[in-house]
Amino acid sequence: MSGKFRNRMQDFERRIANFQYRNSPALGVQTPARQHTLARQIIDSLRRTDFVKTISRMPVSAQRCDPGSRLFDPLKASIHYRNRGLFDEAHWITFLGTHFGKHESQGWNLAAKVYGGLQNRPFWTWSRASQDPDGITNWLHANRGYFLDPQNNLKFSNHRKYEALDTQSQNHTGEVAASYIRWVLQHGDHRTLINNIQAEAGQNPHAVFDGIYSEMKKNVVRFGRLGAFDHVCMIGKLDLAPVEPGSAYIGTATGPRRGADLLLLNDVDAKTPARELERALIDFGQQMGIGMQEVEDSLCNWQKSPDDYRFFRR
Image (spheres, one colour):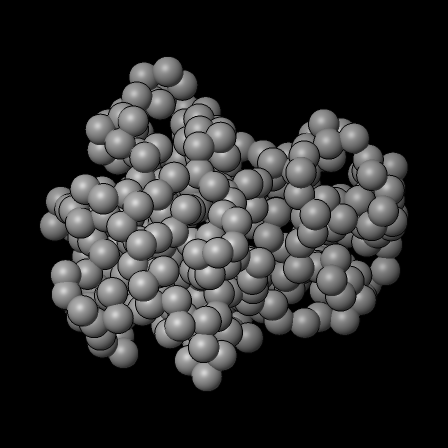
C-alpha cells in the first residue's frame, strides 16, 4: 500500500474509533482489528471510485470500443463515446457493462460477445438495438447453443451472478435489454430522459440520482436495488449525468444492510428499521469524509470478514 493510502487508512482508523465512542457506542467496531479491517475496506472502495473518475478524465483509444479487441472495456468505451458526443452509445454500453459486469477471471468477455454479436456485424449498438428492442432476444435464442455451452465459460460478474442468458429462462438478458431500451425510448433518448428527470427533481445531484434510480427500478427488468444503485453510481462517475447518491438505499439491501447492523449493533441479523440505518450511515459517511457509494460498498464487503481483511471485487 502506498504512503498516501497508508496515511489515509490510519486516519480512517482514528475516525472509526471516534465514531465508535460518539455513537452509543457503535458495538461492531470496538476492537482495533475491526477498525483496521473496516478502514481497509473503505480504502478499497475509494480506490474503485477514484479509478473510474481518473480514467474518465483521460483520452481513450477507440480500441476500447471494439468487442473483438483484447482491449475492449465498456467503461472506457463509454468515455470514448461521451467525448465524441455519442451520448446514447455511451449510456448503452455503460448499461451493458453494469448488466454483465467484469468477471474476476474472464474480464469483460461476456459483454464483448453480446455487444459484438459474436463478431457478426453489425454489433448490437444503440442504433441497432433501439430500432428492434426484441432483436437481442431473438439473436440470443438463435445462438442459444453457443451461450449455454459450458466450454465457452461465459460468466457474469459476482454482482450479477444470478442473471440468465437462456431465452427459456424468465427475465433473461434479452428481456432485460428490451425493457431498458423501451424505458429510454419512452423519453426519446438518454439525454432527454435525464433532462426530464432534472426538470422534475431539480438540480440537486441527490434528487436526480433518486429520480433515475426510482425510474430504473420500476421500468428495467432485473434492475432492483443493487443493479440500479450500481448503474446510476456509474453514470455519475463517468460524467454521463449529474448524480450522486444521498443515501445508501438500504431498504431492500442484503450485504450493506447486514454491514450497517454489524457496525451499529454487532449483529448482522438485527434488522434495524431502514430509516434508522440510513440516518446512521449518513452520519457515518460524514464523519469518515466519504460518499454514500463508498459507505455502501465498504460495509457490504466488511461484513463478510469483519475481523480479517480480505480483498473483494465488485
